[in-house]
Image 1 (cartoon, rainbow, N blue to C red):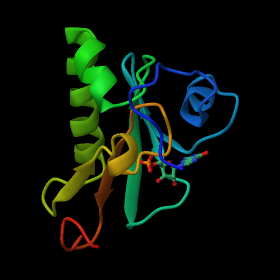
Image 2 (cartoon, helix red, strand yellow):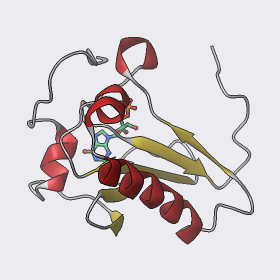
Image 3 (tube, rainbow, N blue to C red):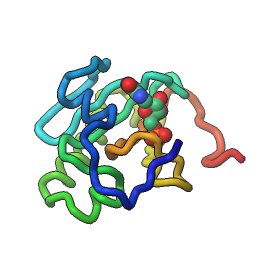
Length: 125
Ligand code: 5GP
């Protein structure tokens, strides 16, 4: 069920629980601003989720309310995870589903990082 991206942050979401280490995740990178881990249902040979450490429900919330340091730190982390996983030369795709039409299921901002094969058309109906 997609989330309503206009609602305030709720720290019971599954990625908040991963950040608090209440449930496990296959972490590939972490720093002061971001945590990156493998998606539990990978849709590509590489499917990593990168999330900010701060309590932001969506791309909308993050882009409006995060500090300059949080935004810079998060963006740099996404790029570093792609580089560290050898994805720059072959190429990769970033996706941030937002709200209902975007199909966002987890109410903590996450960027999907896909790679490892030709990813095909941008949208499939
Ligand atoms: P969304 O649809 O919100 O953009 O993507 C949510 C993603 O989170 C999905 O790709 C889903 O497979 C992934 N996911 C949901 N629950 C968990 C979990 O407990 N652990 C991990 N690693 N990924 C999860």
